Each structure stands twice: as structure tokens, then as C-alpha cells.
Length: 333
Ligand code: GLU
Image: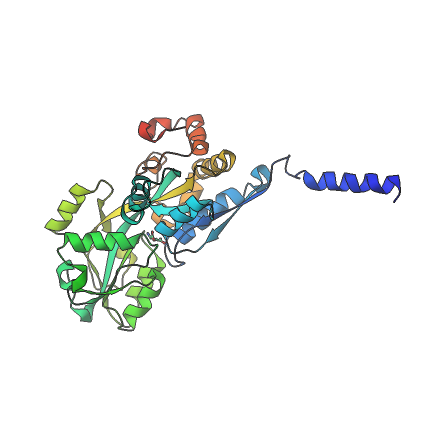
């Protein structure tokens, strides 16, 4: 091989090793979401869109994965299988403090929060012919309480316990939320729980079939006690205008949590900084991507978090003067 050829090969290898984008290292990251008819899936899409638009600046390419939900996402982020995940605020709290699914594993101290997103309501859907009008009517019925790995599984258990309905008194199903509307419409279940933002395709599908369905309020003395017991539950209202084919004529009272964006302490500060910055600096554009985001403000996106805020996000919040909205207990570097 001639010297000239060797030099050309070395030059080619050198050119290949440097990035075309001002020397930034190219990275691929994946965001864990939920079922395709929920709100997490389009939320992962909205976040990835914000960062992918700036590929030339940051060299970051984000993709979205449909998953079993919050608990799966937290575990996948902690094991390094996913870089980011969307998870309910109550599940973030439980993971960080070693409760519920994490009670045997202990506190998940490597979990980091980034920001919170839309509110989610515990949504209980029942067929009219099942006769279910309130929580107490669930006894003896076939009820989907949520798949393992989902956020809603623990919410359904909490609500049933608060309403004084032992799990042993109902016929439990544990299928993914994405499958529940069809099961309800086929008459194979009487009701299902789904903790989700509104509007969403899943509840639209469940309410628009041949079988008439009702959204059941999550209310009562037991629920009032539940609200006092757990810091992460708050009262919510499901606007019935989103589901005109449901039997209800009025908005439905419920309780709920918030969707949050999480990662692990091991994810590169540069990546978390870039994603946080792009979502916050383009918040008005982001909000147009789903009607569930209409209530978002920079301030309320920093509430409802319980794991420490990732250092990359903190860097942005400091720069943008948003640090004043953050609970100081979440600032650990
Ligand atoms: N809250 C659900 C969960 O954590 C997901 C809801 C959605 O996909 O919008 O599993």
C-alpha cells in the first residue's frame, strides 16, 4: 500500500470519528411511555419532537417506546434499559421511598425527576348494564384493575380499599389498558380502572361502542380519608365534554396524580439539560401537541416531584431563573 493511500485512510477514519455537528457526540435515547391509546405515548412523542428538531445543535435523537406503564418505566430507567420514562407522581414517590412495588427492593435512590406534565385522573368506566353506579356496586363484578407494571394497579387497589371493597370480593382482571375497552364492549368485563390524562383515545373508544358506558365518580367518605393519608392524591374532575357518548351528563369527580418525566442519576447531564431546555423554552408550542397540556405552566411543571431533580435539569432551571419554584429538598448534587 502506498504512503498516500495509508494517509488517505487515516484521514477518512479521522473524519468519520468527528461529528458533523460542531463536534457534539451523537446519542440515541429512548423514552418509555405507556399504551398507544393513552396520553403517555403522545407525550413521549411530544418531548422527542422538541429535542429531535435541534438534532443539528445537540446531536440527540430521541425515540419512544410503548410500555406497560409507570412502574415498568421507572424500573427500566433504573436498570439502564431506557434513558427516560414517564411515570405517575405517586409511583415516583413510592419508588424513591421504597414503597408499594419497591417495598422489598428498598428506596430507589438513583431515580431522578426532571419535570411534571399533565394531570391524570383515576378513571373508572363501567357498562350501564352491569348496574354499577358507584364504587360500592363493584362487589361481585368483573373488574380490570390494571396490568403489572402499570401505574393504575396500585391506584385501583387504594380506591377499592378506601371504599371498603376487598379484592377477594371482585373478579379481578389484570390486562393492559389498551385492551380494556374492547373487553368491556364484548361484555367480558363489567368495569375497568385507568389512571390517565384527558382526553384520550382509550376512554373515547370505551364510550363510543354499542354497549353504553358510564364514568363512575371516585368519591365518598373513604376517598376523603385516602386524600388525607397520601400526599400525592388530589381531587380532580373529568370533563364530560371529552366523552359525549358516555351516559353521564355532567363532569365526573375523581382523584388523581400527575404524569412526571424521570431518569436516572447515570444519564449524561448534557442530554438532560438539552431536553429540559427545549421543552421549557418552547412550552407554548409543546402545549399545542395535546389538549391535556392546556393547564401546564413553567411553575406547576416543577411541582409534584419527589425524587431529587437531575443535575442537568437543575442547570437549566438555575439559568432560567426557575429554581425559586423548586422544593429545596429536591436539590441534591
Ligand atoms: N398512568 C398510566 C400508567 O402509569 C399510563 C397512562 C397513559 O399512558 O397515558 O401506567
